[in-house]
Length: 178
Image 1: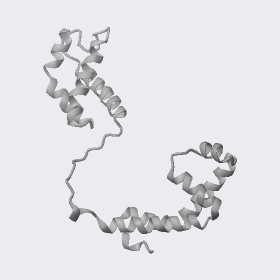
Image 2 (image 1 turned 180 degrees about the vertical axis):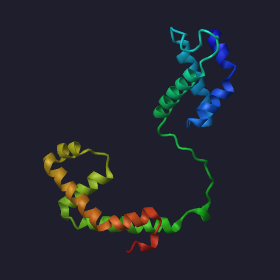
Image 3 (image 1 turned 30 degrees about the vertical axis):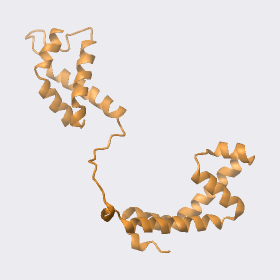
C-alpha cells in the first residue's frame, strides 16, 4: 500500500494525463481509480518503482493509465459529448420535417407500386423488428425468396431516392421534389 500512497501524491497529474488521452473529464477519476486497482493487484512491484533510487517509474504508470483509459473508452463507445439545449416551437426546423414527410410519402408510394406481395413484404420488413427468418417462418415463404425480394426492393429504392435522401441528410431540403 506504500506504492499507492506514493502514486496518490501525483493524482492531479494522472487525471490530466487521462484527460489528454481523450477520456471525458468526469470519467477521469474513475480511470485513475481503475489504474490504482490494477497496480494494487500486481505481484511484482519492480516495474512500478526504480530499484536503485526508489522513485516511481512514471513511464510505466503512464502506460498503465493509457491501457486502462483505452479499455474504459472501448467499454463506453456510445458516449456522446453534448449539452442539452431547450427547444421551443420557434427553433424546431419545420422545413426539415416537411422534407422528411415528402420523402417518406414518396417511398411509401413507390413501395405500393411493387404489387401486393412486394408492398406487404417491404412494410413488414421495414416497419417491424422481424428478421428475414421470422418473416419466412410466419409467412411460409422461403428465406431465399424473401432475401432476394428485399434486396431487389432496396436497390430500386436506393436508385430512385438515393439523391433525395442525400439531399435530406445534407440539409438541402428544397431539392427534394414532391
